[in-house]
Image (tube, rainbow, N blue to C red; front, top):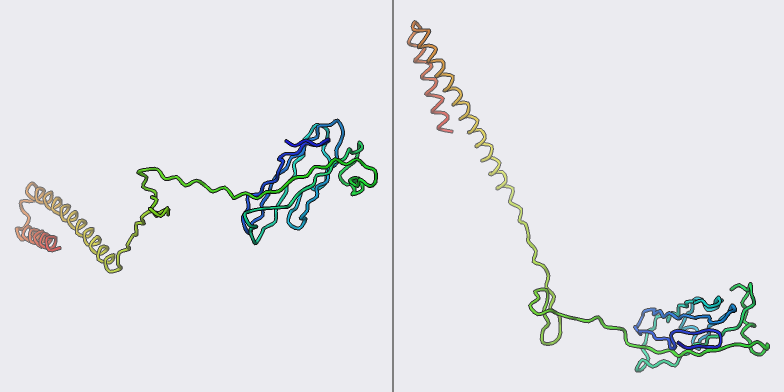
Length: 231
């Protein structure tokens, strides 16, 4: 940690993982190691390239204050990622009760007789971190070919083929006919049971019933049985 007379600064060098067309932030922390309020102001050699929030403020005694330095999106990369930009942190003892709105540029003007503690920070660009690519042996999720490319596997899709309309109609017709056949068989069985009961009643009670009636009932039963078998 760099230590000025009033404030300690971390980090000692602002590092930006350089990427084209992307804003890149970097944090800076100020620590007041005095018993007084300390006002600060941040300057840079390239104000169009960087923004600092806040660029002025007050750090209370024995406390920290965080700053956010943002590098604007760059369209071109510097050669070998070299950077000559610098930041200047100025700090002065602030009177009790001074607020951020009360901070003026004259407070950091040495020509006015003010004692100003200054600290310079360099800027460096570093390559952005690359995510590690690991492949477990025997994994069926992917494989690395000889040229280092990752083969991507997609889950197999199972396509459901809808049956044609004619097939649906045939199935519906068969189902309806089966239901009708089952219903006819049940009715036929019920009729046979009723005829059997009727025959027994006739045998017991109606010895005088005309023989022709019995023949007619038998013929009706035969016809119904024939119709059921035909269905």
